[in-house]
Length: 209
Ligand SMILES: [Zn+2]
Image (cartoon, rainbow, N blue to C red; front, top):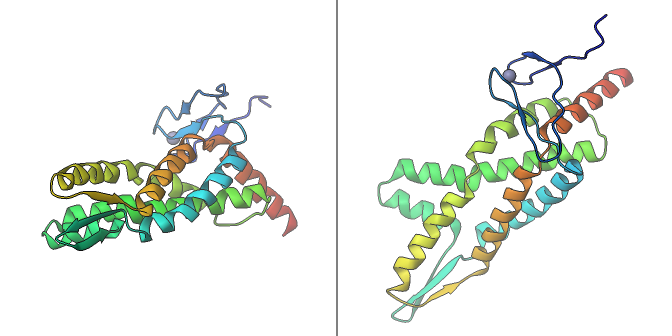
């Protein structure tokens, strides 16, 4: 028997000799480019804590007013969704949909998935959906683009400032914190460790059944 263990790429099933990058390095599948390994310190604990924080922040970021503007005594405030609705009403339906998905829907799904996955791994709870969740989270990674929306907010604020004084609301600060949290979350996720732990858990599960 060959003593070298081979791992299959989770995305394209290519057999690979396990790459062992150092902390801070990355290993990709040579065929499909799937991120195989990105060692990080205490990745499960970190991901679990950050996804809970992100999930909690998601609600004030979406529900509290972001900016307020006073025009002739009337105070107008806008929440995150107001931007999407404004785009929609301006006839930019496609842009409105993309902004909604990238800044509201996908981040919420991503945070939920990472909380579910890291929570199961943290408490060593097997679940038959773990592999599916992990694949979905990997695909969503490229679609969570809170920064893009932030750029839009900055541009809108600069324009509005010329018209009237702006008041920044709690929603904006929560949104900025959410961007920082999700950036730390995606940057600190050790995919290889997660796949290994999922595999271990599913083995444990099949022994018990
Ligand atoms: Zn591959």
